[in-house]
Every structure is written in structure tokens, then in C-alpha cells.
Image (cartoon, rainbow, N blue to C red):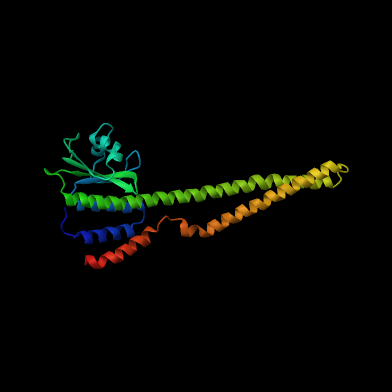
Length: 259
């Protein structure tokens, strides 16, 4: 493990990195590099989702990584059973396939509450397995990475739900107002006398239809008004948490202890 920085200083640097990153991918990539250094690993990868797709890689060559997580490999088999060891880390010993295969692989679940959202995999090439402090560092960084990825996913879901709502309201407005306008125009045309005097039953039917349509339009206005109120409140709830503000606050509390 890198002894140039105390754990507190390393965490402070990691928080600063996540705060200043331009996007989530940059933040996760930077944290992964910190994780590899802090835990004494030679390479690392963040595997995301149920399919454990590589989203950020540090130190691995693509062919080497593909072999290590290929179907049937020891790492893949362990990942498929991750629900059985969600509260632990899993250390795999070689030999592994590949020319430059590592001696050990450390697998750490990415957890959000009780849900597994992926895994952190670190490679070690030394003769001895990673010591307990290295595993603890990997676990701590994995929690940080899981938080960033989950927040990004929730923000994307929030954005998509707002977009779908706008599409729904636009379609609802179009589908109701267009036939309503046609009905009103035809009713006025029938009452104009162009086609003769309206029978009482037809006049009554037109009045009832117009009343029903006006009621639907009133309901539509209320729905659209609620949509506008939602737009006004959206800035306060668009982000499940405000990561930059939260991390900046954490950094302010950590930096005095790191000096």
C-alpha cells in the first residue's frame, strides 16, 4: 500500500477529486485509480449492473480483462454468486488464464443499502495476498463508488420520468383539444341553420356533448396546471442527493484533520 498519505489525507484527496470531476465517469475513474494505489493493487475495474459490465478500468489491458471475467472464469462464477457473500469480500487465488495474469483477485460488492449494483475487482501480482488494510481500503472506496453510480442512475431516472411526463401531457392536450374543437365547430355549424332547424333531441344531445367536453377540458387544465407546479418544484427534487454540495461539505470537515 502507498504510505505517502495517511488514510485521512487520501480520503480528503479522493473527496476533492469526486467534487471537482466534470462528470460521474471522471469521478469514478479517478476514484478507481486512487483505490488501486491505496490498496497496493496492480489493476482494477468497476463492474456495473447485473451483467457486471466494465464501466471504468485502470491498469488492465482489454484482452487480459476479457479473459479474467469471461463466462466460466473463476471471477465470473464468483460474481454470479455475489448475493451469497454480499456482506464480505472474496479473494480468489490463481493461476488464472492469460499471459500477464495476476496471482490474486479481490472482489468487493458495490452495495446500495441491501442491493448489489455491481462489483469492484482488484488484481494483485505479488506472492502474498493483499493484507487486511488493503481489503479495508478497497471496501471503503467501493462504498464511495457505489454511491456515485447509484446517484447518477437515480438522476437519470428522474430526468427520464420528467421527460415522459412532458410527452404524456403534450399528447393528452393534443388528443383532447383537437376533437373538442371539431365538436364545437360542428355544433355551431348545425345551430347556424345552414342545414335547417335542429330537432329538439339533437339539440339536447349537442348540449350534453358540449357540457361533457367542457368538463374534460377543465380537468385537462387542472392536469396541466399540476404539471407546471411540478416543473417549479423540479429543481428541488431532480437530484436524489446533491453530490457536489455533500462532498464539498465532507471535504471541508476532513481537510483540517488531514493537514
